[in-house]
Length: 249
Image 1 (tube, rainbow, N blue to C red):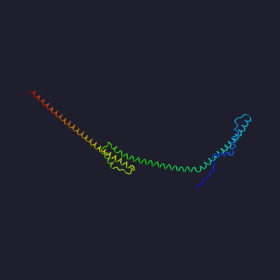
Image 2: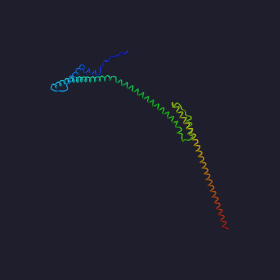
Image 3: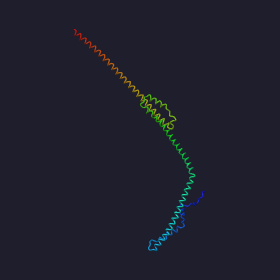
Image 4: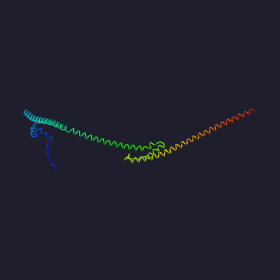
C-alpha cells in the first residue's frame, strides 16, 4: 500500500521571501504606504516638511529592502557558483565512463546500421543481377534481328535448351514467361529469315539465269554477225569475180 508523503520543500517564491526576512513586516509596510495617501498637495512649509519626513521613511524602508535583496542575490550567486562547481566535480567522476559506454553503444549502433545497409546493397545487387539476366533473355530476339538464319537457329536452340533454375529465385515465374515469349519471337524470326533467304536465293538464281540468257543471246548475236560478215565477204568476192569475167568478155 502506497503511503502519501507531505512535501516540505519550499517554493522559489517562499525561498525568496525567506531570504529577505521581511515577511512579518509586510503588513507594517502596507500601513506605512497608506499613511500618506491623503496628502495630495503641499500648501505651506509644515506640509512640505511632513511630506519630506514621510518620504524619507519610505525611502529608508526601500533602501533597506534593496540592501537585503542585493545581499540575498549575492549569496544566491555565490551559492549557484558553488553548486555549479560541485556539480562539475561530481560529473567529472562519472562522465568519462558515461562517454566510454556511449562510444560502445554508438559503435554497436553504427556497426548494426552498416550491416543493415550492406544487406540492403547486397539485396539490391542480387535483384539487379536477376533483372539483368531476365532482360538478356528478353533481348535475344532483338539481338538476332538481321542475322543469318543459321545464327538465329543457333539462338533458338539455345533458348529451347535454356533452364530457369534457382538463380532466378522469386522471379522464376517472370523469367519463364519472358523465356517463352523470346522463344516464340525467335521461332517467328527464324521462319521469316528462312523465307527471306529462300526468296533472296531464288532472286539470285533468277538473276543468274537472266544473266546466262543475256550472255547466250549476245553470243548468238555475235556468231550471227560474224557469219553475216563472212557471207557478205563471200558475196562481195563472187560479185567482184563476176564483174571481172564480164569485163574480160
